[in-house]
Image (tube, rainbow, N blue to C red; front, side):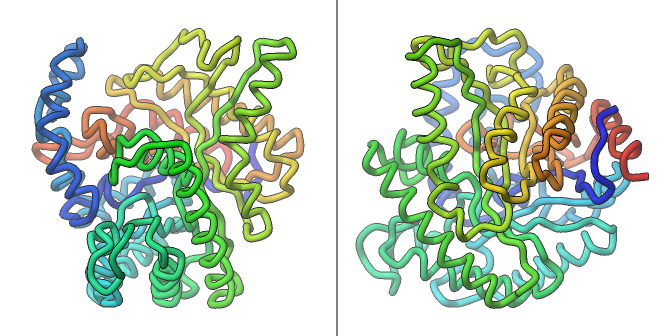
Length: 418
Ligand code: BGC
């Protein structure tokens, strides 16, 4: 069994829009527009029976509408009871901005109270909260650029975005006080900029390379401003950002090595490089391996997830070693796979933990591993069918079932913590 420091955090990650249910934000508006088209388009693909036999499946419109999601908003205590039974001592969640500031400048005290109760429920169970302030969803007033927020571009490209984000951050950091030590300002700014402003497959559906970089610049500014503010309010706060990073593997030779260097700079390091002076820890979200051989993604695909992603857990070690140069604490804030039948999850967890432990032995300062995800959830433009949960959710009855692989994860945790 791989070894970890005594104070290592083991747990899982979630995000508000993907599990809470009952949200009203820019995504819920987008879902209304695209769900029918997506269900239709899914008919052109072949789907294995084990995907089609689940509810909802990719051919159904409901698949693409977050709706009740996993009803975690009402069941968070029950879900945290399971996390506790599984031996978790840390948990990552996100606050839904659209709930706490449904209208510009008007904060909803009832919703703020809700998140206080969520944090208290974690603390009562001996679970350290990692709180993300923004995991991609936006209040509608901000996304549309309407109201007194001013006309013009909305969302993260709104000219006052960093101030608006900081005001929301300030409200939450003040409200939650000392009950939260670890704050994550933004989740995967690069993935968001790519899909929402580069490829146009997420709201607001913009495209272009310039649009991608301008969006990253806006998010860099938002992080920097929020970082200073959070540190002013809570001196003990540890503030990080969760970035998606890829193991780019060169097949060798000058051209491939050069391509690897460029890809790493453009994807893994761009954001972190700009904010390295306003950063207490790096949140690493690792899912992808990309073998470069006179082109990208020349992977072997020996094992794949239900989403067709190449499963290469050991690559997390290469990314971790590459992050050592920043001399920052690292927390693995996401790592997992869509695996409805739970065939590869135990193996994935075992290999990932081995790789993380080796990186620690080689001198990387790693403080925790948070698996994605605690529960099955709403996987953005793909909808509900990809199953990332340690806990399976029956979306008809909302019943929770622990997947067998999770017991393997628990064994690792027990060996370490108990
Ligand atoms: C995101 C999660 C998402 C997961 C699996 C990450 O990029 O932060 O919200 O569910 O990947 O795709």
